[in-house]
Amino acid sequence: MDIIRVEHVTKIYRIGEVETRALNDVNLAIAEGEFTAIVGPSGSGKTTLLQLMGCLDRPGSGRVFINQQDVTQLSAAQRADVRRKVIGFIFQFFALVPVLDAYENVELPLLLSGLSAQERHDRVMEMLNAVGLAHRVHHRPAQMSGGEQQRVAIARALAPRPLIVLADEPTANLDTANGEQAMEIMLRLNEQTGTPFIFATHDPRVMKFARRIVRMHDGQVVDDGAGVNGLVAGEAVVAPAPAAAAGMRVAGVEQ
Ligand SMILES: Nc1ncnc2c1ncn2[C@@H]1O[C@H](COP(=O)(O)OP(=O)(O)OP(=O)(O)O)[C@@H](O)[C@H]1O
Ligand SMILES: [Mg+2]
View 1 (tube, protein in one colour):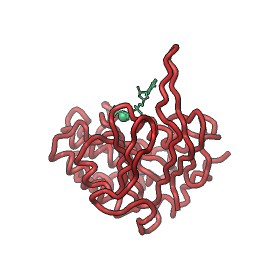
View 2: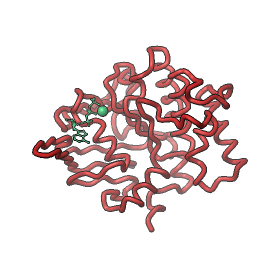
View 3: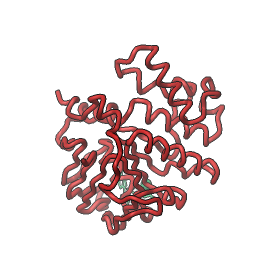
């Protein structure tokens, strides 16, 4: 079953007289368990597509479905709710809160989740252990390496058991060893939980791990096929993502 479906999506940015067609009739479906890289030259629309899939922005035309719900029809508040409940984001510059330590950064998205303090603690420690950072619990971002900061960001993205993880150039600021380690951790979490990961990237290291590679050019998908690591769309056979099992469905945020 598709977790995200993008249908005939077009996005045009206008600045004064200048019009940029960032996305031009894009169609894409992402299923459970996928580990997919969106690749293409600078300006080809990768970040724009990720932002539409993550409810950070709206298309000019076309529709985006998350768990069968058309999120392009939602209000800004409802889209914020979808982001919080079902999307995990990982960014190029980590985007951790500087004054919070590793523990508090991972706990942050859980504060509104209704979990008890003990449940939050268990989940935060489970995630910090999963990314190999149980010994950095009280370090703030400035007191950690880039690789460690990105691993905290991975733990934070996965902590609320999102339906999908969107990562924009997650290895761009990491050296080779740290980039590979981050990819290995994300692949392991993907295999353990079935949560689909979608990367926007230029990085051959990410492409090497990807099971599916979607190639963009001038705002269009020009190629879509298996990566070196294997499967193509719809072939992934995995257990349901825990978030889906726990009833954290997008439909649940309709008010
Ligand atoms: N907020 C914006 N306002 C105006 N134009 C924009 C905006 N965001 C992106 N664009 C334009 O839309 C096009 C697609 O941009 P996008 O950021 O999606 O590309 P990208 O594939 O992610 O590139 P990169 O690999 O450099 O990150 C580019 O031509 C860009 O200049
Ligand atoms: Mg980009």
